[in-house]
View 1 (cartoon, rainbow, N blue to C red):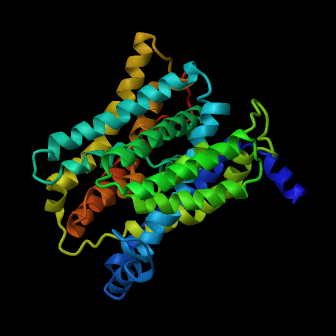
View 2 (cartoon, one colour):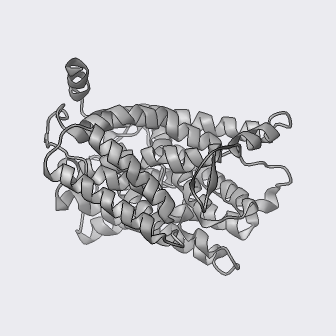
Length: 402
């Protein structure tokens, strides 16, 4: 056991992150394409829907009824995705690129603008339509795996500084998305279940304060926290982030991750499962939109157009405009060795909002017809952003700004 831990600890999660995230992004792309094919073939479309909505049980929350395959993926497995997101956020703040105020400044400015601008574009396009306002946050999030996977296709044409900035912006973006899910998409609260969740958090806090370094107590209490949060009315995936915040970390600045650090150990162990199994499975379960009856006029519908333009226009103007303004005003400087055109290409790629956008779309609307339109808008905006970003970055060649 010691040998395995030390082997994982000999490499930094931060140094391995881009490689594994890129590979996971390519797997996610393949899963999304497969979902689209299966959902639109007459021989498989019915089976695809039947599988996702197959009730497996048990009843964990009265409001949700019996658990289905789709619920287990979106409310269960995705809690592990958010656990990993929380671990990455905590590591970056305690022992990473966001550990100092000067390093946080540019990613925070870019991420905040990159969430606000898409939401504003959506509200301008679709906000006047009755019942569509809850979708304002759908185009606000960037999909790290998908975006890094697209950049990986360009190889050395994209400098590492661009990949690192995109990753950091997306991590801050994830923080905003988690806050939005917790605040904007919680309708009713079950007080007793919320009290149980609070008690679980107290236990996790005590474990942390007493410097318990074994992972199993945190994971066991975290599972209980997930169940209480699921029953409370708050989306269960929030439990993953809360658990991550209370898992201890041992700093290892400018060195490989500490093999005795619980956070580093869990992050290394969890990342391959999330990148290569959970996120692709989520993509397969949520990207399968039927195009039967859809036409070019569908893209002009307010909900579809608002999401697509929010991702494509809102992200690029928000992120690139914020970086340009911060640099010109002297608030924060753009990365050395990166041209403005490369930063613009990065801002375009940040418009890929696949995983988190689909997730928020499922929370925003209960009508299956609207959710289908959400999927079309997310796919259209993400594909357009990916193609435009690749075209811009490819045109830059391998020349870096001095």
